[in-house]
Image (cartoon, rainbow, N blue to C red):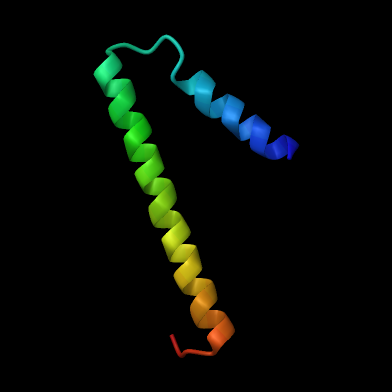
Length: 55
């Protein structure tokens, strides 16, 4: 749990006092999009590995 809180703090500190505001919003949206894409890739990999599909 402490690791997740550390990552949250690093994420929030990265955007402190950043200007312009629209760029901060764009970067936050992009980081969430990247997290979703990485999650989908990991899901697909483990799904194939567990179900014995050939790569």
